[in-house]
Image (tube, rainbow, N blue to C red):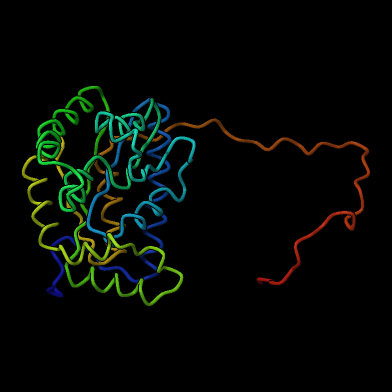
Length: 269
């Protein structure tokens, strides 16, 4: 990859990155407050290859947000009962109500990716998804839901490097699964599946936004800044907050030594 930066790109130091991330997280809070006050509904879908950095982006996005009004949905494999339901059913039930944000860490697009490549669905089921998916998304947006879809893009070399770093790190080895290893073995199959998915579902009404995720920190800032640019949020006026005086009442508390404290093994100064 060329070291030359695209026009309009700002190169940040580590300290500047932290400062800009904090600023963007504050803006996300303002966005959430507007969504709550205006009764809007926002759905953000994050897709991409394994190790593309979806989890890291989501953690930075939600760090300051109120979890009562912002939910992260990362569904496990469907149960036997769910496999007999309409494919979209278990995702539809997770959609937001007024004033809520829902972030899908993988979504109904599992069918166009891992299920297609690994043979977990039939060709008929796959073709049905490709036809109905865009229709469903069109229905959601016409009902007033803001739907934003991101694809985090990384190279084969970077994915291998990240897989190897997980293998070498005992604290992160749990992130690896047999499916992850198979993803490397079937790199071209996944690339073809992604291209086919875009051909059907990258629509004018609900486009895919591709994020260069080769550098994780850059991807986090670029995605969050882009999301903020898409949501037409406005500052919300708040009533002035004044702390009330502390209650004054005669009361003798029990001695401190009657409580069981956690041992002070660390002291941070």
